[in-house]
Image 1 (cartoon, rainbow, N blue to C red):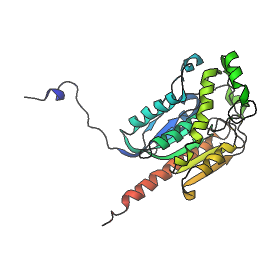
Image 2: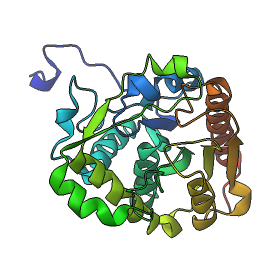
Image 3: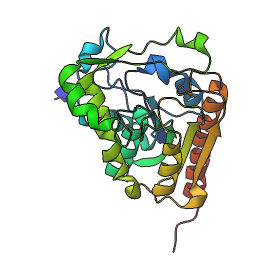
Image 4: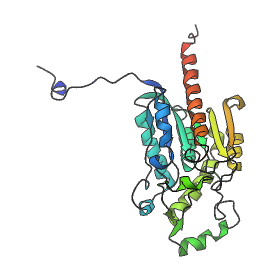
Length: 274
């Protein structure tokens, strides 16, 4: 008698697993289309699968979707995408922009066996807002949270003409901003747990995050010095993959991923120890 599980729709055998996949994580109030989608095609041209999840509360017609969302939800959504990616690839390079870089760091700390390496673009560890943790007016936050329900979000570009096409939310609920405020210090405490190869991209003119965040991360992670790099940009603002130096930023990411792919191939060609 035929196995009933083999009847009906024809079944396709899974294709070969890639050695690496690339998980791309967007930033706060952004979406894949508005911030990181430009990375997908050149990475896929390397023959690697990608996942670019929409994190909780993002990618909807209204920022109201962010109400009641915590940074743990953003990590959970990225983690689900990571697990889906690992159905196609042995390990993952995680690329995160801004708040997405905090998600990437958290995934590397939580899943060191699955995360091969990191690309952290404009990591939002220390926000430039005077209300953010560690900034001059942070003590006013308890008062402001009782009086203000939402806060405007500036789209930070050195080339102002490019800001017109930004699809990110123009404002965010105050509770979501407070979740982002909490995410930075929580991530900072875990930096010593990160030991994977890492590329940090940061503009010296970033008006959204304190540029020194990049140096802090670079020095706090325990990745060996020869396996981590910090690259500075001089003209762009926060939107590294959409602003005036976007081609150079995208090329830096693709070159890093290609190098990780070559490293994996060299590792697999080594003879096994006797």
